[in-house]
Length: 271
Image 1 (tube, one colour):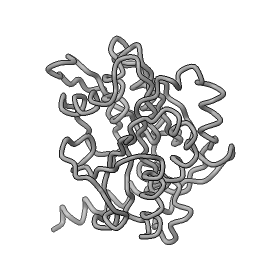
Image 2 (cartoon, helix red, strand yellow):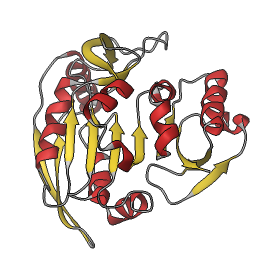
Image 3 (cartoon, rainbow, N blue to C red):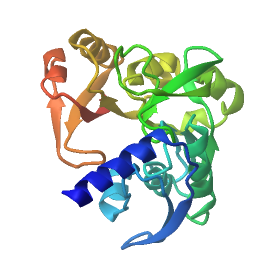
Image 4 (cartoon, rainbow, N blue to C red):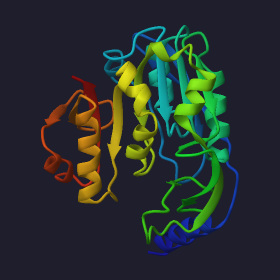
């Protein structure tokens, strides 16, 4: 009991006290891709990441060498690296992460595995306009959080100012030559996924990339219906995934199914 109380006290202290954490580079050996390095953030609330060949094999169904991939909400790069292995060194993964403390780890991960990947880390959020905004986090060292301004009593009490940019304008002005190679978009933005997809709707409509997104636990039934309608009206078929990069999927054929699970990842494939 004393040890439990001590651990709980230490965890609460870590939650309330700001500290900038470093990273540890780990090496994973994949049967097909060989050695892959990853910088694991040492924040005490960060989960331990691992990489397997199955994740990369899943992505390779939709991403080929030379393709362009958008990883929106890249965090430290645990999804970015598998995406980049599929796109290869001749492809490009644009990895967006607005949190400046997390971004330092993502930027380092972009320097690893350069014989196998090409990652461009970008330190801003995808927003409806170019502006600064406040994200809210559950701890003083900014591990878990996002744009929770529309979520009411979210209990994320630690604010962090971040830079926001209109994503479609940014892509058209800075990466127009790459856009014809766009085949995959991953969005993980704490319930803001729908708005980000709406923000780049013209690009998605033109190039029809595969979409990997999240139905966030805080979305209302009306928001879930709007999300379903948005994607199906753009010509996509939705599939609920049994975990990120999972081969187990079930087609979502009605808006009502978007409310059957509280929180889930889903794949949207162009019809």
